[in-house]
Amino acid sequence: ETGVTQTPRHLVMGMTNKKSLKCEQHLGHNAMYWYKQSAKKPLELMFVYNFKEQTENNSVPSRFSPECPNSSHLFLHLHTLQPEDSALYLCASSQDDRGNQPQHFGDGTRLSIL
Amino acid sequence: AQSVTQLDSQVPVFEEAPVELRCNYSSSVSVYLFWYVQYPNQGLQLLLKYLSGSTLVESINGFEAEFNKSQTSFHLRKPSVHISDTAEYFCAVMSLGTYKYIFGTGTRLKVLA
Image (cartoon, rainbow over all chains, first blue to last red; front, side, top):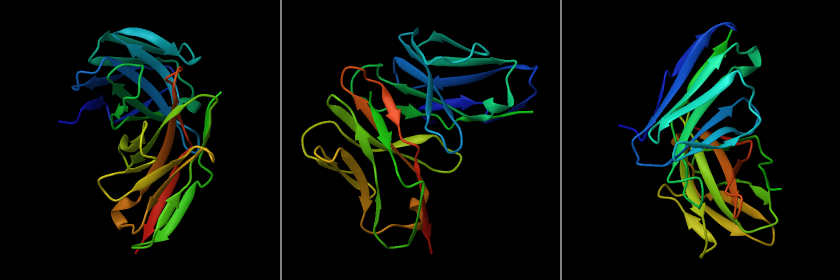
């Protein structure tokens, strides 16, 4: 089983729908991250959680709402999204949000907004 | 503020030829440097990292990168590429103190038969 698992792998939704992305890590890490990956743009850090507490919100619109119930699970709740929100959403984890530890990534959820 | 530049968005190269993927960074403090690889339909995987010590770091699949402080570069090289190396490669920098990862825009390596 891979270290970081994301579900679903693909999601198509209308602008008025509400859906959630799920991320689970089995590495015993304490920090978890949401990134947005769009074509021809750098990876955009969205949120960081460390020991279940949000430590970073990179000016993400409120239509994206993260939730971290414990150090192993991270959710991204979506509502009233826009077409420009179509992208690959990557979850990552690391030992904590300080220091030089590399991040471990899931395979992402490819989101398409109709 | 820190930044990472990968000037080459795409690099086509024939199988068994050498390749160099360029990465330059800017930071006012010391940095950690990373290369990640992303295969199609997958997330990013750590390829190699420079934290301290020897400026030349190697991966298990034949890639190497050299930290050059004076040129603020961390170019990735492989002397002989394989078809299976076709992927997108991301350079990332983490500045000491902020501990924030900044990723480059990526370089798509396409190995041709």
